[in-house]
Length: 283
Image (cartoon, rainbow, N blue to C red; front, side, top):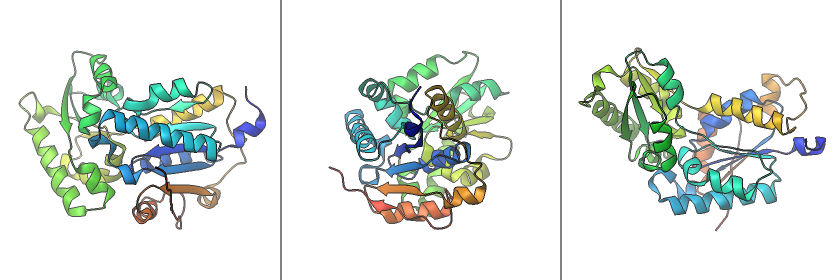
């Protein structure tokens, strides 16, 4: 059990860019009394197209900054690629710090699919990671998982390039539908990158109403609450309303041009109508 003062520290959240905002949104809904520091590592995005050593180094640098500068009481890796590359290392480095990672929602997909065919849209790095392959191997053999590396999609979302988003989504959805291993039977799609959760309206239109889209924001938020409670780090409730949530300070930082993060914060209504991200200068 930690001291009451420790529970008032912020929760540090990071991603390669704006994708983690889908997780941050769920976290703020689940933990309305808490404060958050969010870092979009846009200067090194997208992680899904970087090698593991690079992602590990960036994750360690961001975690150290959140812990030393902001005294974060917990870390949330709001990125599948960062989780696969760095969560084990970070837990070893900070054994007393609650650290929550994210993984593609294969387990829920295997439970809810009726056809037994599930598509996974993710970055190439995530699909090739040992963590993902171990998760895939643990699923029931009766369920077929069709994997699709969505090269360039996270970058298009980061840059708010609507035309590229539409074109790439169409290409990858068609590739999955035409997969000879049962693409026509897909009834569940796992969004294995937090960026993709920001464009669910595009994907839902292309897949159609008969296909369920699964993302991991809410499960991660619930898990964060559980680990904070177990560690005695839940911030005392003050009965926050949605208006309180909108007014609560939210510190957002970007290692790239903060204008992209600022626009995304407004577009996705993460915590109020006016949120300004600042530039973060790290090596």
